[in-house]
Length: 291
Image (cartoon, rainbow, N blue to C red; front, side):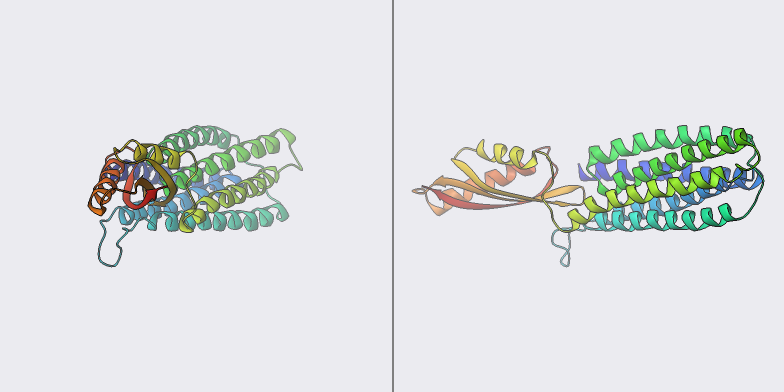
């Protein structure tokens, strides 16, 4: 199961790297020839996407490595660490765009060429499609890094849409409106920074072992209670480890049974949880007497 999830994430990430390379080349060339810094800024965004997607690819590779003596819980924390690095790269790209946009606004220049609008329409369609595909895979395999990478694609679509609006205003407005696409790039950088912050927080929570959202704890407790001999469940603590989860659960059993019987029930609880479709990596079961 873990291997299948990893392969899906890796395949999707490789597609993203290839598409971003082509887009960065196309947008950079069109921006220079078409006199549009908004497109050049877009090319910078796509280039940063190549870097971030490569990090996600390497992070997924590391996070799915088997446990060893130095990493008894596996290497899953590599995934949120990579996600944080990716958000920092996103912030860096936004800062570069802000600085360059201000410079372009202060420097008189010609209006962008009309053909740049066609390029931007194609870019927005491509990047929004890529966002939807990658985000869906990230949610299905519960990968923080892949979901973060997908928002890189959406940020690229946003900057491209902003560039389209800015160039259209510059062309329709005529003389005096030449810097409209630069203002568009500046506005888009604010959106990128907002997305980066929103993506940073879930990755940080994962590193801090925050409880996963949703009803996962309820599903785990329900499975445990279905095991013969389990009267009730008490605590259920869960933390994310890469693409899977580590569970600590307290079960209550008849206080009159032997230690051997209680141990057997605990093992059956662990086996049931590991065999479930809840992507559980390991389970620690604590046995308590009922009443």
